[in-house]
Image (cartoon, rainbow, N blue to C red; front, side):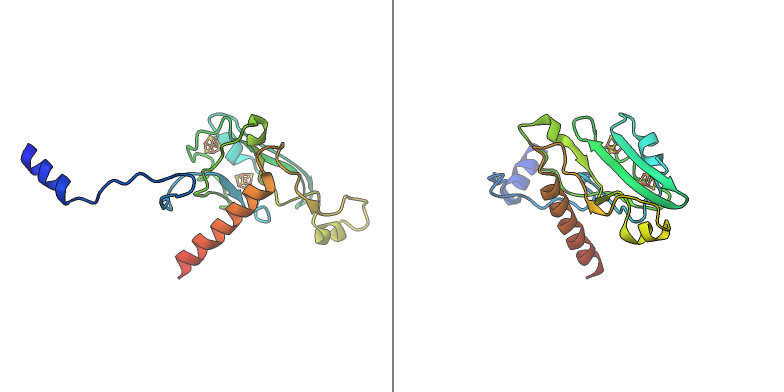
Amino acid sequence: MRSIQTLRHFTSEPQITVQYPRETKPIPPTYRGMHILEQEKCIDCHLCAKACPVDCIEIEAEHHGRILEWKKFTIDYKKCIFCEFCIPPCPVDCIHMTTEYELATENPDGMVEDLLMWTGLRPEDQEKLEGKAKPAKKEAAPAASGGGGDDVRSRVAAMMAKRKAEKEG
Ligand code: SF4
Ligand code: SF4
């Protein structure tokens, strides 16, 4: 038995050390990394937050009938255990996990990531609210510094686009 294992060892691919972070290995598409939110689909039902076993999702939005005025949708990656429990309960399939895993930072406060692409109302929603004075669409607030909020978001967005293209191709 041992001799078979030894033979297998001689014929298997050599295990080569990867010089991370200069080199990385491919990440399986099922890897549970950072989240991404399709904000335009989200209905602020909080089912994802309720399913989270460590209470690390915080959502705040004001409802004007069916129109949402967004304040925050954060995940505290200091607490998140990447269990994926928040994904299946979503009734509109708008929160996903990506293969992004590079969360290392010298500032733990930077590990609270805001998944919103915008805060407040979208201009078209503002028009629908018939002249009620509401804040205009603006860029989402950056993560609480150190986490490179917009940087992470754009990397995740680029990665999701690549995955989608790979799936379709
Ligand atoms: S992956 Fe798990 S711990 Fe992280 S936000 Fe989702 S439910 Fe919470
Ligand atoms: S479960 Fe889905 S729709 Fe509901 S708040 Fe979470 S992400 Fe938004």
